[in-house]
Length: 132
Image (cartoon, rainbow, N blue to C red):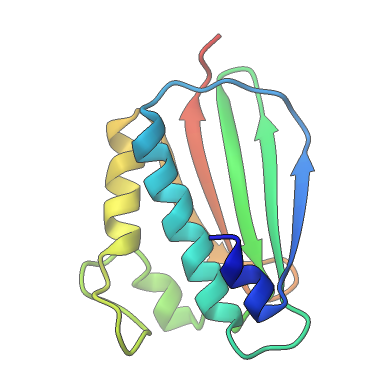
């Protein structure tokens, strides 16, 4: 996916607050992460000064990746429908990416939550149980 942030001139900020191993299937975790990053890039398409933040956090039982952007943000209506099948704001979207991603997170014993970002845009938290 490296070409797309470069093409859009989006800055990527990595914040690693913890070193953590989680339980899960690598391909399924990657599927969730790709969906979250693509959604963030979609929200920042055509906007100058796009910033995608990937933050790794952990507590005693879970590791988390926070994916945040400074894109177009979420209206209250969109926020209420984030994980509703076939609800989408995209012209070409099916409205299933977040639904499938949340199902994957739950199947792996974790969670996926989303809402408005702290500085506008959107913020999603993908949480999985720690491996040790």
